[in-house]
Image 1 (cartoon, one colour):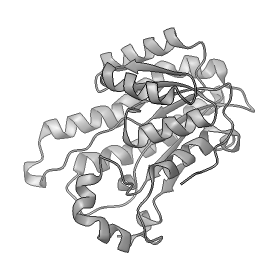
Image 2 (cartoon, one colour; image 1 turned 45 degrees about the vertical axis):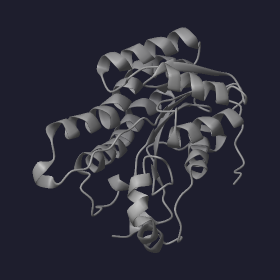
Image 3 (tube, one colour; image 1 turned 60 degrees about the horizontal axis):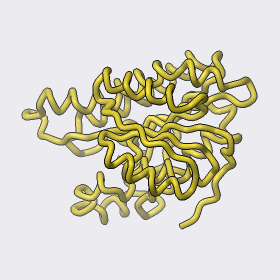
Length: 257
């Protein structure tokens, strides 16, 4: 499936969690649109492998960092500042999940998900705002795009308590930061994917794919490139006057129970 990309020539974009799944698709779409890429992941090997593939499309620099910790966030921000003179687009995509019954849900499952899904996007945005501000203008603001989830828009019948709460929190954090950073010529928006076929959802889909298709008004699962296209829209010229928005890309599933 091919989706036409916007023109991001001359823009520099950082995508976290870009070594696989949605992050890899988002990075690929941004590169096809002409952006210079900075990609991050937990391991240097995975980052280098992804950068080698993406480098066939355009310039791509691998920046290994574990942003689940504040020190890891700082390390990534320092690498970005050393590697690039400008930053036009920040895509906070890195995330994780944890499932366990309510009575047995562990503290470490709560903290691990909240640290990466909610704290890291805040701290990384905070650290990189000086770079974003320096490139943004009233007509062409810098962009922050957070990758949320339909799980933050609806109450699902699954035991992913910290994941759902983290994504709902990320959606509201998006609105709060949009108000804070708008006057600095930085937009902040979120994309809320539905059930998309990736490695992260493979276990879920192995048992429930038919049910998700049946409950989705559009009758099918999502594709990574469709999420990537939404990110490109928010990062491109068409998204210049959009901020504080949470865009569901879920085939209508968030409208159902």
